[in-house]
Image (cartoon, rainbow, N blue to C red; front, top):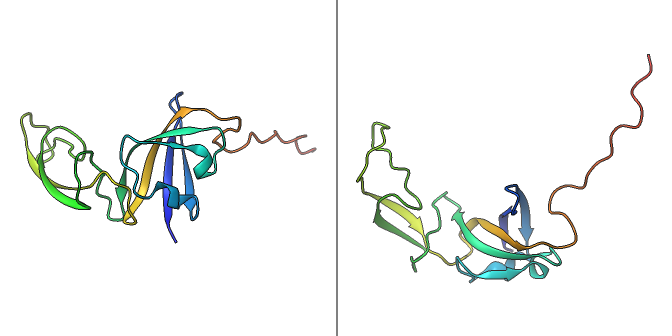
Length: 138
C-alpha cells in the first residue's frame, strides 16, 4: 500500500496538503520531477499538476538530475543547501557535501510537491463553512 503527502500549490500562492493512498498514489510511482500528471488519476477531476519536488521518509530533498535513490553530492547554492556554514553564518562560495534523493518518485518518497497547471471545477481547500446562524442569547 502506497501513501504520499501531496502539497498542492495554486497560482494564487496558497498551498494545500492532501493525503494520497492507493490506488491514487500508485499513479505517482515512477514519475519524475518536471512531468505533468492528470488530476483525474489522483482524485481531483479537471486538474492538471506538475511534479516540482518532494522529500523521502528521512527528510532528504528530491533533486533533478540524480538517478540513484540517494546520493551524496557536492553542491553550492541550490536545492538541498541553505548556504550556512557550521557556525550559522552565510558564506558566499561555500560548497558542501549533502545527501539528496533522486528525481524519480519511489516508495521511499514521503512527500510530493505538485504545482497546479490547470484548475478544475472543485476547490482544493476545505469547503467554505457558513457562519454561525445566531449568537448566543443572554
